[in-house]
Length: 169
Image 1: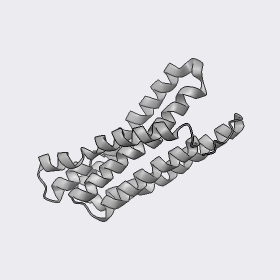
Image 2 (image 1 turned 90 degrees about the vertical axis):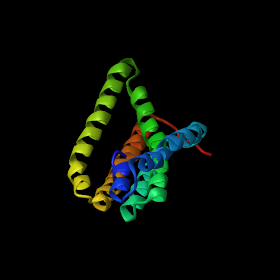
Image 3 (image 1 turned 180 degrees about the vertical axis):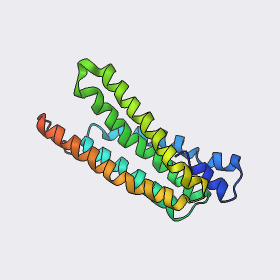
């Protein structure tokens, strides 16, 4: 996410215009959060996670192919959706695993989120510095696949081991 605006600037867009394009992220958060709220009682959590991961992967794949206002705005929208579906499902799961240690669990969850974001930005920085945005976003799309698979499959296994019944539409 932090490199979408700089990719647009690298493509010749003004910083204000690049900033405007990534406001679609907030719109995606708002819209998709409403949808997740409706679906969360009907769809199994691993499915919600898979939808979120697919949005992340698709968004990054779009800008890996071409960077312009439209592709960045669509990607930002999809990243907002991915956050709404995947992150919220992971966070909800984290708070329910050991309810008596909810505070500690969320502290570790937040720490992992921020450290992971920092490390990813650090690792991707040289690619952005050299204008290699196609590779940067392609790697992000590729990374979304095992992340999503690990989250959804682990959550599914957890549900099976703890006697959760699959929800039906």
